[in-house]
Image (cartoon, rainbow, N blue to C red; front, top):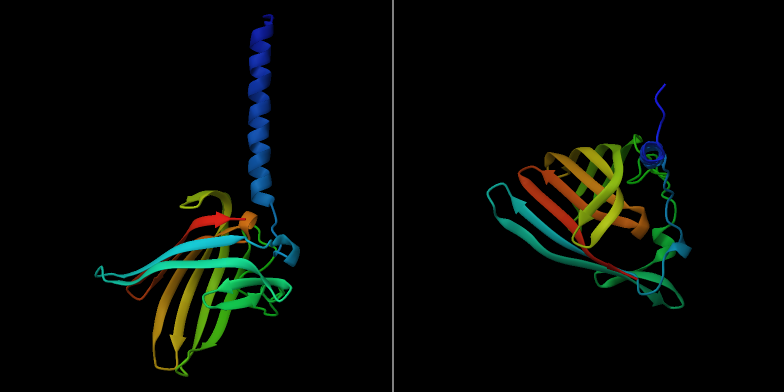
Length: 203
């Protein structure tokens, strides 16, 4: 039997430990659960900025700008600015009472559900969105604001309205638990592509 020298033994031991560590990280990533954020997770001054752009298949730009949301003091409570409005964070984190929610908590790789939403626009047009959802992965993703561990959530289905419009709509959302929000969204719908990407996050 050949003797194992000390340097060779140490090298093999380090290799075995490294492989075990990587395997455990992979396992933890695949089996991790993420619950819905709660009120105490938010702090005054926290801010998210997304860059958005919508382009037709012909290359016509129909929307191009930024969207900023910030946590502020709202009459002694935490509020989130959304456009010109401010919404109580306690309302945002309130569990959604729906069998077909946008996010089905806790999030986990491999989880599937149905997302359905009825809506009414300002001109009175009613519509419905219906999609099959699956959490595809949880891994590090890079966007303009930096690197974040994020779930890739795929939505596939249709959108229709009372004016006779009916189209296939596919979306992919990257949700980062660390910042309690999505860091990127891409949508393809009836010859139109729309993206939103986080370009700034601060506390």
